[in-house]
Image (cartoon, rainbow, N blue to C red; front, side, top):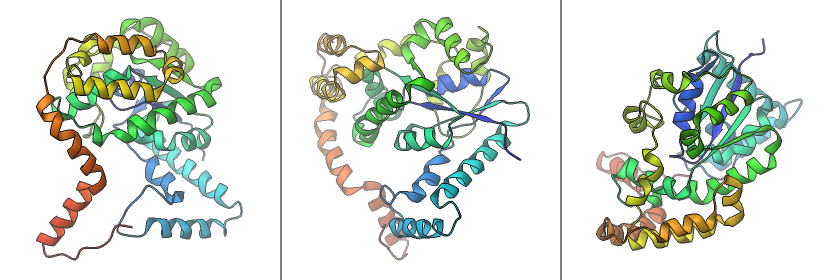
Length: 326
């Protein structure tokens, strides 16, 4: 039996308000959700030779799966169709009988955004943008108390944003695009527009009831869920105190140039205005000593893959054999 659930996918960079959006949507009786499942990532990566390092040879396994697909009547199309049906059944089971929609999102879904859109043509897709400077600051303040940690998140900033913009442009006729700032400053109009896109009745009470939507697990914006029980404009300006030292301002200037005027404009931001705000920040030495050594440390961190080295050391100390990750 074909499941009747309709997925809603929220595509955004981390720290862009996706958990807030998820919870407001789930305040509606016909919308169900769960903490970030990431369920689609390993499924779609079964046919990607690059991007996975494991104790088994992932690239070799992909070749095996592709060879298996040749035995199917429809080839890889059958394999993809089964992934789709499998996921829809899981969404339906997680959602329960009353829900019409199920919201799924994960920061790393930018890696498979095209696959998701192509596999679920009947789904709803919300592209959520946020001021890139605020995203950068929030990446540091949310997980490192303001310390420099962007080397951990470069794939989102340099790979994720371009991929999301390109996908949104390519499928503009059947997606909903919204800015985080507008959800806070003009909540009634923007949320009403999102619910209209979903063909759902909007109620102003959703903006109060979202605080009652609890997402179990460790993923998602756990600090934000604990701190903010209602829409709050505080995060809109909070980034300025985090990015005011000269090293961070210089890094952000280069990053804005990387995004470029056209992409920023498509997202709803102006390159000159953001650059002017950045230049206008009062000079500060906050975080500067730590940045001086953490930035080169980050370069080494990316090349040495600390997590893999740490796991090998753990095994060595435990007297276990050490194997290659392929």
